[in-house]
Image (cartoon, rainbow, N blue to C red; front, side):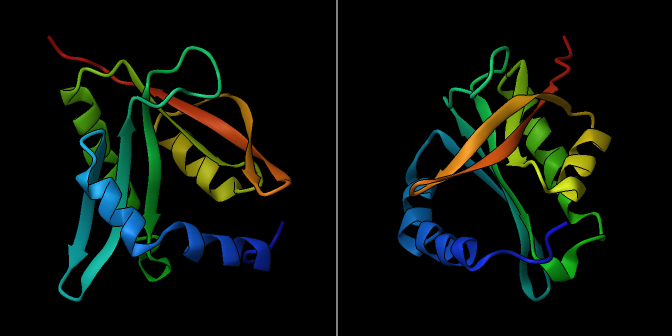
Length: 146
């Protein structure tokens, strides 16, 4: 098990998740954000992206692109509540399912999603420059009530 993130990933994240990129996402109608806040400000968010082709078969085009909870708020149910809101959003869109990817070595995240009713749908690779990292694709069927 790896403790922390490598410097390679640590350099990638701030370059990828810039304020200008978030501004573009917020203006894009295919992107949907739900933010959790407390009295001190945001403690996490979920981002759903519509129209995304999954890397494996039998998935819808609705991806949970990001589910992020600040580390100091881990274990308080913030991620679960954000995910529940995201699933309600997917249901309102009449999406048959949602999918996401996570690092295949991130066993706590995979276990979290499996506890929330996701199932493993396959594997893919996350690419940064010339490096490829195995990712697990997880899918959850959305129950649509008539």
